[in-house]
Length: 225
Picture (cartoon, rainbow, N blue to C red):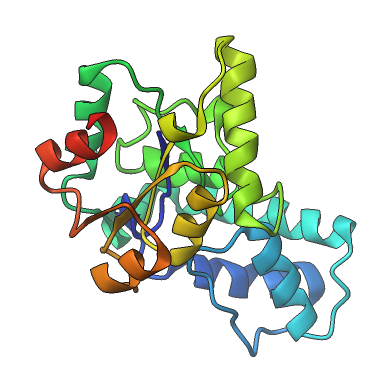
């Protein structure tokens, strides 16, 4: 089971935009004047677009400098994250419920960098049931479906058993999450806690759409049938 983070499990009320604003000026000396769309996109795609929009060539070296600075900023913000944002309704119970039921490995497919994913989730105590080693993270590709493929391959290698596409469940709040799941034949579970409502997630191809995660029985039904 592969979870998205932002607007699926937590809401940090736009903290990432502030981090990018700070880091762009810190790393390049250029003040931010334009902000790309963040929803459902990977860090690699976002960072490259931020630099390009400000007339800066997104070389791999510069992208990685931006990421190092973003990681440092998120770590500094860690003590305040729980005050700034919130765990979304039912997130903790859903993670715990899937873990207690047994039979499912829980990890992440997220546009975040792995270290930032840890900072964000640990701030709310949502990290304990997740295997961070086998996740798909935003440094891997600008193309979100690649993250699902990577996470499944990592799980296969780590656990010594293959995962049929229909046994993989991707949970997220944007059409990008749904597209990434469907590209690999995985089950796409949409959660309408972000910008996109239930209708938009169904139109994107989600097989299951939840209003939020507050009904743990519905979450478990989506996972285990």
